[in-house]
Image (cartoon, rainbow, N blue to C red):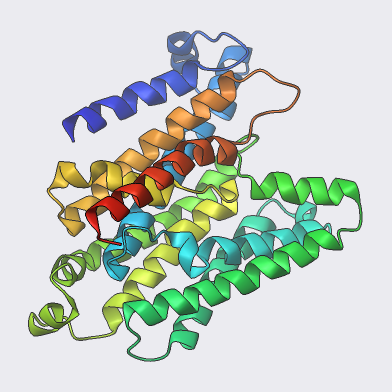
Length: 323
């Protein structure tokens, strides 16, 4: 854990130093954010908000994945399983599809967050009162499949190739051209999500012993799963709203740090948030350093990291007979 804590500021410094233009970071920092010199503008208006957004988005995805795996007691669960990402993505795709996203910089992320909450609400209603983890997963898969079908339909009838390209690029996830506006919009929802998951930490710890054991310890109320779902929708929905769909962080990160917290689901939340922030920040540095005709999408980078890990996870599960 101490290694992760020490690595994050170093990665943040590396992200600020990365880019096609060399910047004297210490001089630009000393000039202040109001200065109009090129070094100060690049640092304060371009690189710093992007790096901080990578930290926040990565933390939200990592923490959401840990909460989802703890609540469903399924090591292959991630926020996208319950349609959180698809709900936010569909709302964003519809705005891009009809060309109204350009009316206001706040419109797309705000409605994407609303889409995430709507998707989680639909899962909760479909699963029904007192739903088990298995029924929640089935409801999530059904809602996620339906939302994915609607996104595919929107792409199929895209009014122009430009609109289709815009939607596809957004779905691939990116932190390019993000600034303080996106950071200010996402931060309150991320904090609300983190507080909800913090309040449910003891429930997750008790749930690791089984639903019956959790009930015998006093966690009988269905408010706890709802609190977790609300927290995930708030944090992950905000992350998707400002950065697009970035997969595999929520799936991979909890597995990487679980041994560091001795399998404790409560401590896993914060360890996953820290590791998720670090992983996405490193992935963004790789994106910035990539030289090509178009910027490499960060969703593609995390997929290249996550897919082999996913294969390894399935092979290990088959070997150990826990799946």
